[in-house]
Image 1 (cartoon, rainbow, N blue to C red):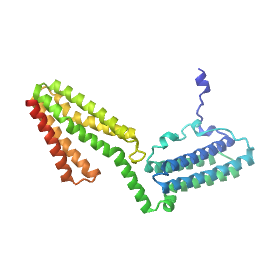
Image 2 (image 1 turned 90 degrees about the vertical axis):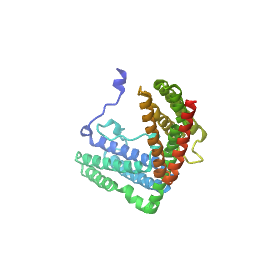
Image 3 (image 1 turned 180 degrees about the vertical axis):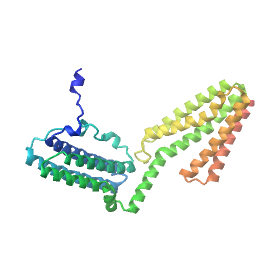
Image 4 (image 1 turned 30 degrees about the horizontal axis):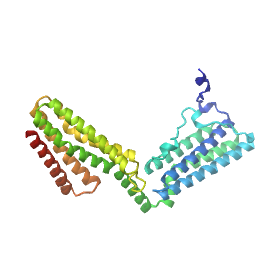
Length: 327
């Protein structure tokens, strides 16, 4: 009951007085400025030019905030009401700093333009609800300013991140994606697909029991996934190598390793041994060629070389499993 009493009740924008509208606008401009500075801090190491874009945007928000404060002091005095946008119904929410820290550069740019569009709509609505000419003029001017800011990230980008710099930053972002997700994922998929071939097919031909073979494949796949995930996460914290979050790399490697093994273990849920084995062999063929395709597309490995390496290695491991199982 007490929590219900203490919890702020969201109000419609139409219920705010002119003083409260100014208070809300002041806090919103302050929050947006801090968010842009958080974007700048998150991007500065890898994208210094884009970081300067967001610093300039934060400076613009600071100017707007000061204009609003001056108007409030002139009309209502220096006691500004504490009213924040999270108290207002349908007001767009903002991400906390710990989520901003992991935001990609493209997401940051998109978010910035969405923030300016939301601010434009707010100032239009607020201007329509005030009867004071000075207040209405300022809110209208800010609405026009925010409308022009929808392309502010692009306009400032032309100054700080020209086409060649933006292309360089986009290449850096792609490289980071490859190092953090694709490379560990491909290594895991290859390990899971190849390393589990021998135990699964050895168990299959030794027992010719599809259920027992499935259990061997399941345990081998899950075990390999856990091992690869922990190994990837533990051996490099990413600070010196620039390979990104060890948790993300570990998850990518571990999940793809487990999936690589489960691909040819799941067919042994089919009760007929030869049917299950033929389906598993087809799955193995698809897995190996998929790995070659991914290496060619993302790692720029020549397709024939990738196919030769993966198919040859997988074929040798598969043959070893069959021979051991028959022995």
